[in-house]
Image 1 (cartoon, rainbow, N blue to C red):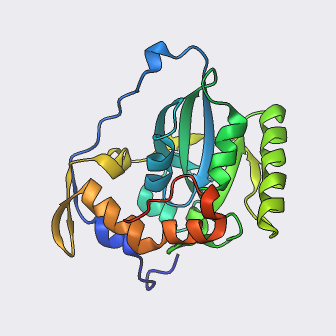
Image 2 (image 1 turned 120 degrees about the horizontal axis):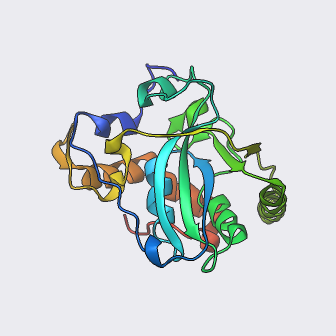
Length: 223
């Protein structure tokens, strides 16, 4: 990614103080816990969207699809590692199915954009679905075909074989709701405040809403 390009996300990163703790939600009560991995641009946003879905236990940010072991955020966003910003979503299959989650995923992104997502440009912000077996691949392909017919446009989101998933740095986890502090151009803000500014400024909800209309499940109206 070009360092000269103005990117709203980098304005709110600044110096993160502390890290968000990872806490599984309701995992003890779940009977059939499964994982899925998707890349939908900014992993903060994918976490925020899918942790609101009934049946999802947790979503964690990380990197996958590249060649570098244990990459850092700086390495990944430089575009040199081949990794995507990705999210591993743990869900209770007795409550929600893989097909429904993929249905929601397509409608939370712009799957017609091959160059990134919204204001975030470059290879690390491309979209993708990472499948663990033939059954997941078949389901993902069926959902892709449905989404493509609905949009009437070619979908460029690839369906790829699952690869090693590396957790992102602690401060990225649950960024959207964290009370940890970061320095921004507007002064000292919580991560949650910085995230709200980023999501609105990056145009994610505006574009998803324009593309999918009433079928966009996570658009933050009024923000």
